[in-house]
Image 1 (cartoon, rainbow, N blue to C red):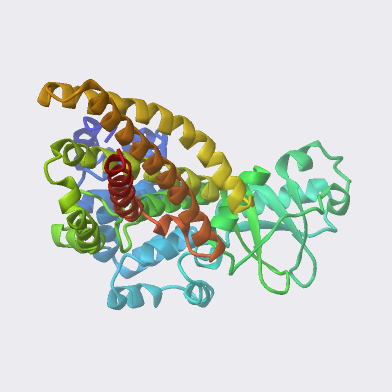
Image 2 (image 1 turned 180 degrees about the horizontal axis):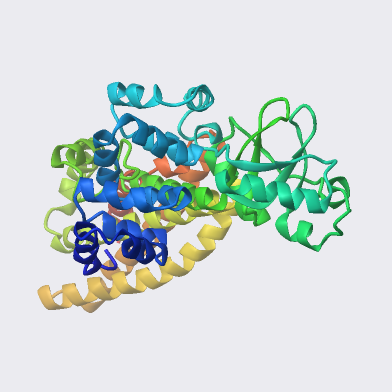
Length: 460
């Protein structure tokens, strides 16, 4: 909370009945700050404070209240007051708010709404949560192409109190189809008698209601829009997606991708780490971890198969974890970078282009890491087996360096190729999580290391 010391003062003003003073204080604040203060009050105090505010400010402050405060207020208020609060909310905010309640309470709240609002909620329920139609706003400004600039500004003044934004106004024909749009700046700069049909821009960018939310966010970003109009299959305007919705989408998708890449299953969007129950975190994190633990049986079997070759050579055993860990890290880096490139750009390069780019980087990494592996092997052997001849020591160190190089190159190629193949199959590349890539590179890394050192040392 930004102003924790003001909460007692607000309570004191309420108790003393100095409502005019309280109203003046709240009106001077940003709705976020006012909501932070009211969230620290008791439910009846929140209700009393909100009742003092003008309708539009009450709506804005209510939207920033803590979720539990909102729910307690709605459940404790009278039917008329609840109906007024719900109707004062923007359509997308109202739909999101009602989703917090269980089916029984939600049905009771929806029954208080007029038929138009109920129909809006029903229509939203026909879309998936990740489709534009489920979260679009129907509170947009509409103009008739026959209006003049002066009458259009007057019309916007009339519509403004109930709209989410008036910076863009959408021009529709008699069938409700979007034929253009006007910015508020265009209207102010136009001649008073200039018709909207001459002012509006007709190169309107739209998205359909059944489109994925990531598509809408990308269009808003690429075209630098404040709002994106949403149309139905017949081209009729049905809503808008605002830039703040795009920010929420990007944050949600980033959190979802991060969870997938960390091997966390299930829906984690909006979950607070400390507030989420322990059993739920275990349920989301255990499946991938357990699967990878079982996968390690294959790696252990491979290592076990080289038991005779490793017998008596503690150095090879000692450096095996380092080689596997480095390979896993290189593979994870490659996979993460490719997934990031796929998520943030429309990457259309062929597999060979992707591999060639990654291999050029990994060649340099392999050279550096081979040098480090050589020094590690040489130092370990000189300090632990000082009686071994120098040429034999250098040979073993050189072989380990070659094994490290081979592991790094293969791990980089594997980490880059897997997300690419998944993208081609139209599966979310983030599903190829870091633990999965690490497990695969551990398996291949152990195999490459053991095969290389066995072949080269046995032939010496």
